[in-house]
Image (cartoon, chains in turn red, yellow):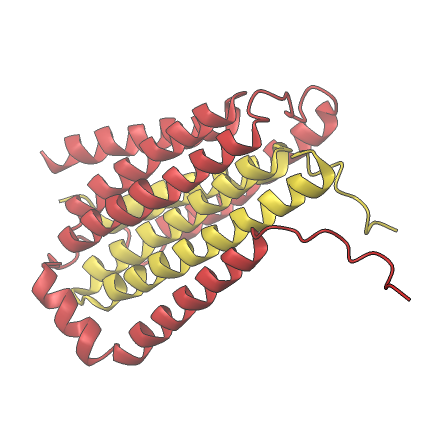
Length: 172
Length: 100
């Protein structure tokens, strides 16, 4: 049963990721990215990480993809044809070859690792347990993460702020 | 039960597809989306490892990575908006003022 769900969500995650790379329209890419994130959330559920699955849907699918779609529609260049394969087929071939070699190396490393075939203990990622760990052992990283979020908020406001007109010549 | 290496191989495939997307696409936003996808694959590896060892520290790690990713997306999109405002294009090949 678990294999069926793993195969199902694994395939939807792969379909989503291929769709992000191959779509001509940037909004379609963002929607495929949403499919990838929701499939990953379901895979987290299969791995016993209930809190993380919901956090993934809230943060990644609910905030990050929404921000992407905002910016894509704000910029308005979603249908500009930018796929480099049309102009430089050599680059596309080299990129695909590199990706295949990388995947082969990584896949072999994972398959031949001591975890191959190992099932692992069922981890219960309930909210209380993750929260206890977060607020006892990992309190400092948690507080630092909030500082980073504050810094990012300030930075984003400054970056996207209104550009002031040039000051011009000083009056004599 | 599904072995951990299956999750790792799936994460490796998603990571490779994201890396391919960063290399092949020229739209700055789609490159950014592929980077987020790669980070997502790394999160999957962390959660699979957390189950493998039976501890929840990997999940706390993923939680903090999600917070950092949200901050990074906010800043990155601010940079992209400023870039498009300045150069009027999202094609990263045209953003070459600093090239020698």
